[in-house]
Length: 193
Image (cartoon, rainbow, N blue to C red; front, side, top):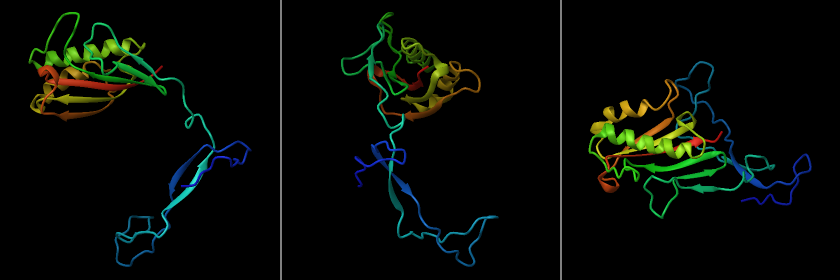
């Protein structure tokens, strides 16, 4: 790997990182291959001899440290000593998975997916609010379910927390078991305002 430190950018500033750029030459066209209009046909499985070129990057806002990392926990929501409810870093809020338990009400999972989804989403809402955020700031969620046969029922509750047409990217994963017999756990990433 090329070490770019100490070299100068075209404007005289120092380089502080590198990147890999895929820059393969176009393989020759093989007769008889189907072509899309205006495009060259490529040889199947043709490997160009040189595919990677190293180049240094000038320092930019994106490549520099964006500030301190902040760790927070929210009172009234169950937590262990092994994690924070929310971590703020580089313009984003990373929320730990929330399950349908509530310290304040001493509530435990009910076994009803609609009720458990509502409680988990309410817990996420409280954690988001602790950073001055709401569901309109969420850009990504992960939903972990003990029984994917309950997906449609969970989804009906889940979508009610977001504005129409403003749903974040999501992955829903079926798991064998969740903590304390919960049927659902939801985490998310939100953009800071």
